[in-house]
Image (cartoon, rainbow, N blue to C red; front, side, top):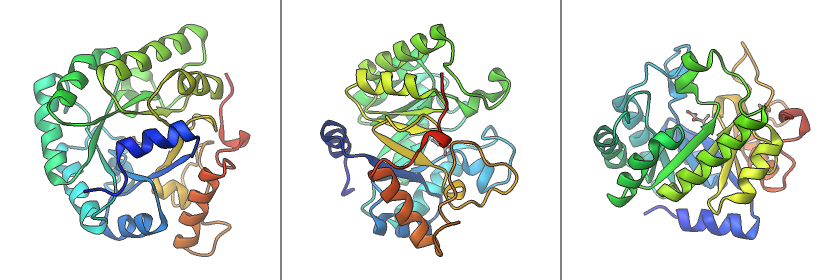
Length: 265
Ligand code: KIV
């Protein structure tokens, strides 16, 4: 049983305690992050980029994510671990149940899926069947071919209003956590204020209830391109341990993300 729980994450939102989270893909890093007090870990389909070397998350399979969930679970027996449902593994409710069961059997405590209102029935069905759900709005990397690139989402008023409506619908369907990726600070603040479930930002400004980064980005290991919302914590701290501890402290005390890591409307 994980030490952290979705109920505790909800309490953190209520008390204003910031939630620090990160992606993890293997046992060694999972053990380290758990020891340092990371509130949860996501086995993201970003593993397609940072572990497998693909140019997007599209090639990642459920078996790939399950393999890494199992590794993270072996490294951090009591951590709260979210498994990411990859591209086209939840295109209908039945498929989502089967894909999610694979991730839960591998050791996940919750699954994450990308998208808005079209997922309402799927989320409802998953929760009814005992599978907690984290939703994901804003920039959806699995939809990069529809979006035409990795761009900030929700800048126009109509898009911002639609994103808020999607968030409310996903919460109503039973989602218990919401990742907001690459949206303006004002939109993330509005959604965070209106939802009772915690919001976790990545490129969504300081007002979310918590933050997440891809671990390789937090360690400055992506030399090709550094997105604006990323901070290399290893640069100012001499070790991986110190960098990860500094990331957690900066999230907790609200100093990360700063204005230089955030997008305006
Ligand atoms: O796959 C991933 O790592 C993610 C995070 C960027 C939130 O979805």
